[in-house]
Image (cartoon, rainbow, N blue to C red):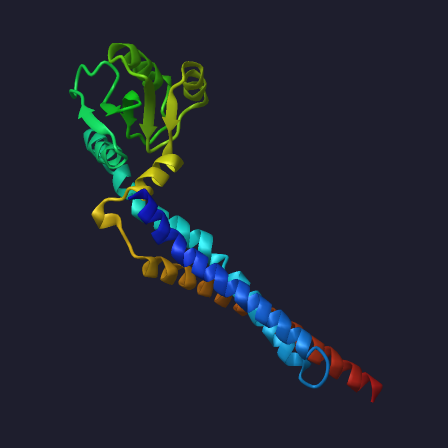
Length: 243
């Protein structure tokens, strides 16, 4: 599933990159071929269009980030209750090949989920927070390691962890899965409703780049008009002075 998702996301990115590279080569070849003579302006125009195409690619990172966030469903995750967050993580880890066991809502001895796989048991402390996660979550999962005879421990949150929590986790070998990494995992293993096609991603990339190019063209056109108007006024004033 992860491989298929990666191909779906990367395919339009590769396509846009190939088209942009081809446009660059064509533009520079055209400019070199007609660099001199009455048609030199065509080469300049080709380079200008190539610059616009390259600028359009600046829309790509934003499009990919939006697509990644949409696939992850992180906005919905932020609105979940703690128990709903655990259920979503259970689905995530199941899609990653783990056998998942949910612990009791109370008296869980520091673990919300138990993950079973051939490489050993993993205890998970899930924290659906708005604020930063403190050392308490790390302390809880450290205690769960011994109780559940686990080989590894995770603290998974839609937020981030405090420096103290990060230091304690590093000292005890606890792995922290914070917001950015969680978004990546959820995007790589999306729910069916979160999927979108490569064509949709490509459309977002092109749209984002087109908006950026249109904005830049507008800025340049406005600056050019103001400069030209000032130059014309100055020329007119000099002409009147000379006469």
